[in-house]
Structures are given as structure tokens and as C-alpha cells.
Length: 105
Image (cartoon, rainbow, N blue to C red):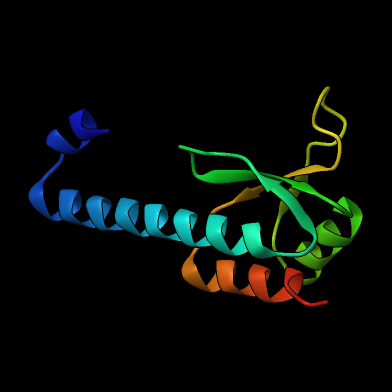
């Protein structure tokens, strides 16, 4: 990542660095909030722009994400990932919409 930023002009490096910082901050926030969600059994560690979660009721979580207008991918059909969903880290607004939808009882 640093190698790519070194090849770009200073204003673009600053913009990219800010976007990366926001993504990292949002991923941490999402991880912490999802871990406390009653429907989430496990949040897997991630160094990517998404989180993999294991749900107690994956269908309910999936529907809540969809109703918030966000894309949540179902990974339940993959071996060893029953009830698992992949959540891309979005903008702060998108992440808040998802959390509001899935944290509802």
C-alpha cells in the first residue's frame, strides 16, 4: 500500500491516506459494535475491507441489511461457514444504517 502511495502526487496521497484511515476506523467500530449484537455469535478477525460474521440467525441479519439498502453477502454455503455473512465496510453513513437495522431486537 505504501509503495502505491509513494507513486502518486501529494494531494492524492493525502486523500488516499484519509480514506484508508476512515476505512480502518470504521472496520474497528463495526467489529466492536457487531460483536455486541445479540444476533452475532462471532466476528472473525480481518485485515481487509470487510468483516466475516457468524450469526445466530443469518437470514434475519441478511434481511435487515437488505432492508437498509446495503449489500451483505451470504457465505453459508461455503464449507465450515454455516450461518456466516460477509459485510463490506462502507461509508460511516452506510455502516450506521446497517448497525441500526441489525441492532434492533
